[in-house]
Image (cartoon, rainbow, N blue to C red; front, side):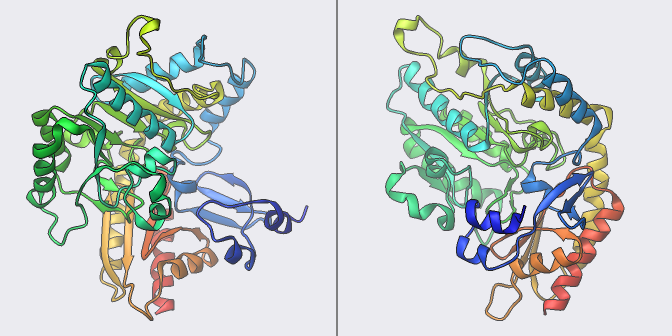
Length: 427
């Protein structure tokens, strides 16, 4: 098959201007091994963005492969509507065992945006169920990204992605994040003021903990997460932490919330939940939120939300195996060493004239380039590093590093060398 021609004829790519796409020869991936992708011509590329931030332990990990294969011999899928399954139950138990304390309930979906939609409905439903139906709004952050379904877009805040859909969205309160001075007072003060005036209208505060990924890897100072939790407690509103991007070791702890010992009322996860193998996401809830939905069926208090593939058995098997690899291979310890090596190379890259800022939370890295006319763009750098055997994807003027946690120290050097060389060449 002529894959390039068939792609141009049939495939509509996400976040892609198709006219530009069809003018260039696409890179067609045929296989993968470890931290590397292989194209149809047999050329290998370091997976520098973990196949859009989801691969954790590398491709074709033998333990996860074996778990999915074994599950396939049992059952690939059965519904959670009116039934349960061994795989889904085991996955839920394994997830709650590593989640922040008090997050004891798991609702399965298939992608991060769906998990956010569920969290928004749970927060809205909680207040209705406890007799405070006036709480119908959310407080979200500027420059937020929570996915591309309409509820998730409503609490998002990136105009490039979201402005076109404004007529379809519900309004929410906003707290600023992209400030010249990102101190705790500057960040938390406006949130405090909004909650003081409008808590009686607000269901929940929605944040990406530690790092706003799609905004360009915007990091928060230590204490911010704890400060948001304290504000939510003070004004009696729920706290939703979107850990779709930050979860499963990306920021150095299993979940970003763990870095400040914070337990939100609701937490969403996705991407790394199956090690990057299969579509799955989850929304965690506390017992208090869960119990507010209990009652006689005639009361209509149940959560009216569901997905055909919720708790899919193959994805659940991959989820369980993913967590077992974290334990057996001490993945977080390895990632800490790799992140330190990345930080050392970033110190040098930050000195380049075209680099205006470098931001890092664990293994989530943003290298922001000078965006003035005539300066090399992040897209050009990411195109050039492909020639050097590395796959990267930009976010506006920001070069993103977000490799699998299993990246080796030699591979860190390749990632840094290719990035540094591409920036230098383009200047």
